[in-house]
Length: 142
Image (cartoon, rainbow, N blue to C red; front, side, top):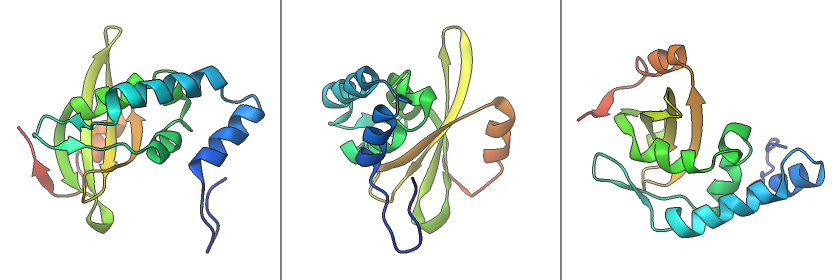
């Protein structure tokens, strides 16, 4: 599943395994790949003016979460709805996000590499959002 000491994790192989095991519909992967080609390959403009980049291998990593593969457009929503960016470990940044979906306010964050590549995205409940707003120095806020 995930890398063991000295090993490496292949997100595309992991997704193939989930599809083969019936835990992830092939149609969901195909829809996410299409969304990636059409709307994510050029990057997603965040409110701070920065362009966040999602590589295909990053997309496969994000699809492990069923809340993402069921609605892959959340990748773009998380990035386009960033309201605060904080320091994270190893030179990375945590971009906190809040958006409305089906009349419900949702929360999440993206971990960004120094070159603005999206490493991962996590969805949160309101308590989780408050917890993450207390960690790391604020780097950007509108």
